[in-house]
Structures are given as structure tokens and as C-alpha cells.
Length: 279
Ligand SMILES: [Mg+2]
Image (cartoon, rainbow, N blue to C red; front, side):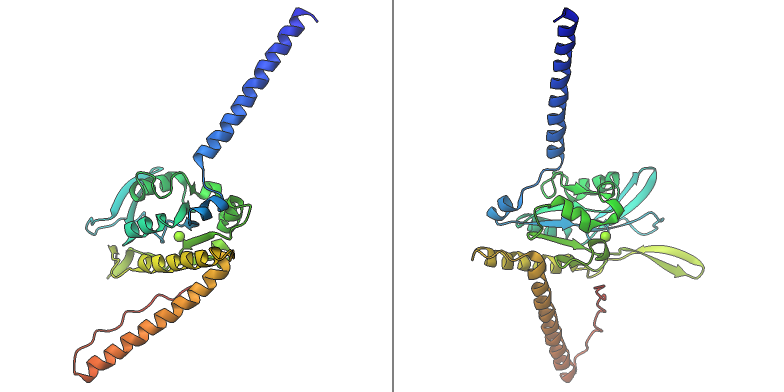
């Protein structure tokens, strides 16, 4: 073999080695960027996976001009040259803290990555809740969150739950808890003038979501510890039904109290209208 050929072969060997190393690095980098536990590991830790939407589930953002006062939980920032004003939903801290003890959480949002990053700097500055588990518009082709979930859990999503204000992007799957849309910034017409005002009075949707998701978690592990793996989609249907019963009995209880007050000649306040579920 000539010296040139030997040199060419060793060069090729070096190049192959570099390609291999780079390939492994790329793979490791990918894993580092989006690392999450498989179903078996998660279940051993008594945890499920929870996919969390951002817009109108945990926050509300507007690009309109807002004349109201700056209050706690309001963020003002510019992203890609556009100014944004975001309000964090009441009870978001408690919700995230509580969920993180029972679920491995992922953000699944149709917002762009740069925007999601700014929001997460506020919601999760230390990365304790979501780490790098963030799927944004760039990772969700055709805005199909259901397909994105299937891709994320190719081995099955029996242990997965999701929370969102929209159901169509999830193909109306059963393991989804739909929260009423959080709309803090609302347009009001004052004569010819249209003004944006802010209000999130009595928004306790995340407190209710916390109870429902924890109930689903408990139910899942009741079966699991009896060596029965019941998929969250089946259990969640039951949980939603049970919760509807709880809601109805609470309403009946309130109604009884109101009747009692009226019969005692006490003043009663008008009941608050409930947002219609879009199921
Ligand atoms: Mg949303």
C-alpha cells in the first residue's frame, strides 16, 4: 500500500471517528435538552405525567394597550419586536407546587419558544417544575397536541393527563381536564372609546383543577397498587363524573342555605354565573 493511500485511510478513520463522536454528542445534547422519565420509572416514583398548556390556562396575554393599573402578577415584555402584557392566573403557584409532587410536568403550548421562555422565567425561574420539558409551536406540527403527545410517549400514554382550555387540539381525548378560559384583559366600550380593563375576580379554576387531578392520581395508584393498570383516559371519565356529582351536591347545599336565609328574612346575594364547559 502506498504512503498516500495509507494517509487517505487514516484521514478517513479520523473523519469517521469525528462523525461518530459528533453523532453521540448530538444525541446526548438532544437527551439533555428534553429528558423525561419512562413510564415504569415514573410509576415507581408514584408519579404520572402532566401536560400543561400556558395561554388562557395558566396565563392571559394581550398585545393591546392597557390603561389599567399595574398589579401583582402582571408582566410587561417585548418578544420579537412586539410588546406583550401578561397576567398570571390566580393560584398558579399553589397549583404548580402541588402538581410537581405528584406529576412530572411538561409544557405543551402553541405559543412560540421565545415567548414561552419569557413566561417560564416567571412561572418556573429555577426550572423545578418543568425543567427542559417544553414543547412549543415549533415542535407541534399542524397545532396537533394529541399527535405531539403520541410522539412523546410512543410506548403508550396510559399514565398521562393534560390540562388545557381547549379540547379540539387534543382531539377531545378523555385524559384531558378542560379549564374555563382565563381572560383577565377584557375590552369595554365607553361611548365611542374602547378600553381594555383587567379583572380576574373569583377565578378559582386552578384550585378545582388541583382537586380533580389529584383525585385522578389517587385513583390511578389505587388500581396500580392492586397490580391493575387502568389507563388515565378510562379513570378520568369516572373522575369527571364523580366531580360533577360533587358540584351538583354543593349547589344543592348552597340552594338550601339560600332558602334558609330567605325564610329567616336575611338578604341574599345573586349567584355567580358558571362558564359553560365546551365539551
Ligand atoms: Mg390555551
